[in-house]
Length: 327
Image 1 (cartoon, rainbow, N blue to C red):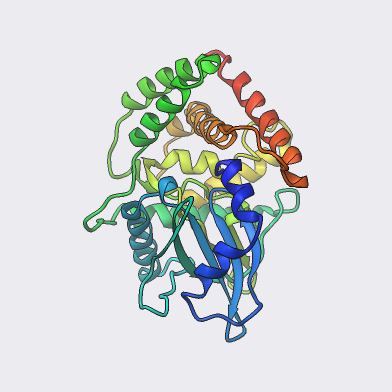
Image 2 (cartoon, rainbow, N blue to C red):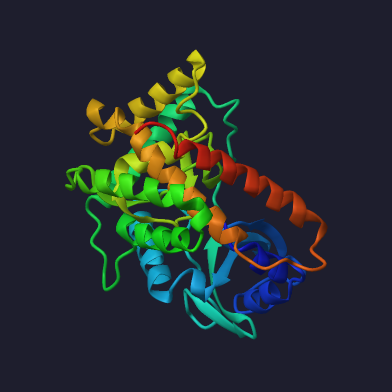
């Protein structure tokens, strides 16, 4: 989630998006907002085919990290993994920048993912198994991935980011204490090619699109990819299912794990550690929310601002409670 002040500024008009999309071939009048969360994402058409423009402030993601993301995505695509691909601009570039008074924007354009989003309330056991198989295939390819000149960030890089933000918020010292516990635990874990590598980190249903005729998923949104234990990708993907006590959720989780194990080894002792991996995920989400809410009072805020801010505050408060649970 980006800083809400930045979100308000950019969404006040389509000027930034319009200036950026002009760097790619586009059908006039086709630009429209699709999503604003960690990045701004706009849908547009090029010769009646849909594409997606994604951009963010340079301070939110470095150029090197963006290049590393695209390199990883191209590797996956060339090895047959169904994911979107970056599209070159009129200048032949995969990444374009735009200078503005408030800073520099970095933009990329991606192809459209075929298929539909599935709903957690309606997903079937077979679809869950295919979802797990898809993530297992991703991790299998990650084991063989060798980056070029730049590597994606690691979980230790995120620990440094979290520590910096938590120290600036002394009222949330409990988060810093939890971070110390989680960091010590992660550092004690074995780290080898079978358990650790580059992960997606946001392999949830809103970032995967099911093609029924192929019985497979197309994947988007690799901007949070990092080096981590593969288990955290499973835990974050199943955030809406793990921990639920009803029998149907447990069956769905098992179906996902069965699919994953068809592509990757997953020991039961790793599964037993899922609750501790979840604590890292809760911290990382808490850090993002703190960063998003860290701004001065916004005068003349748009109508959607108060509702979104209130929702993020409630989620942050719920996460804070999880830091108090016994380790």
